[in-house]
Image 1 (cartoon, helix red, strand yellow):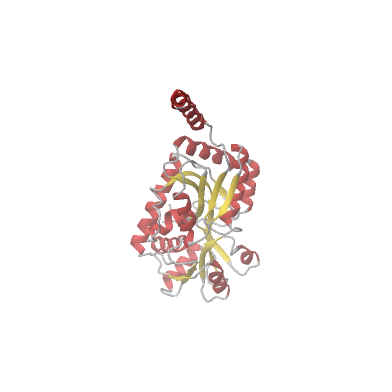
Image 2: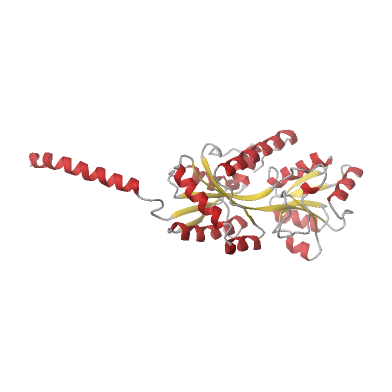
Length: 327
């Protein structure tokens, strides 16, 4: 018995080695992928995730399942991915909040967004909008800035919270425009919009969806968008950066895909190239644009450079304007 076992051992070891080699050589992907969204179902990020997941699954010939993991201002979902096996089968569709804005404002997270997450691709972005109550005596941004300078301390702006990207956008506008408008933080966009509608607060900086119905009804006026270029959803509304002295002003709610750090570079490149193609396909592009999302497709070193620039800008504004995250 013992002799027979010893004779068979080399054969068994060789079979095991061949099995491992075959497994290692299996092309990626050979099983379903998960795409984690750190916010509840039904929001803008979730819409983009499900749009991407369908086409990415078709391109990779494996299902891509969207999982919503809300909590801790996006940190819960991001941490889930950061601590996952780095094999490309668990991905994160992130907003600036959990990888750039929160950390820049001092949010404590159980993961390091630079060391623990590998950037794959930028799917797209939506502008923030600067909207005012119609009673505000300004038809455009230059008039608003002139009014603010002529009436120091009387202009305030609402945002969905302290340390949000909207807060950063407002403080950057204060700095570049030479204004001293007062920040009024809310817990979410809805109460901020309601107070601007009632003229308790004259101005708001927020994402597009909460204000668009009120713009259509004439209850709010949009003076500018915060992306570097005009939004195709509102082509007649100028961007802040068009104003003299505002060149380089750029804030948006972007959607980026990340993997756990140490995911094989070949896998990162494969997924990134597919996403870049998908978001520029006519049908996908139109679907994103219909929701106010400008498709991008930045990937590889370009997306990495984009993130480095975002990180530096937000950290600089946080230091200069004393912005600190509040949960």
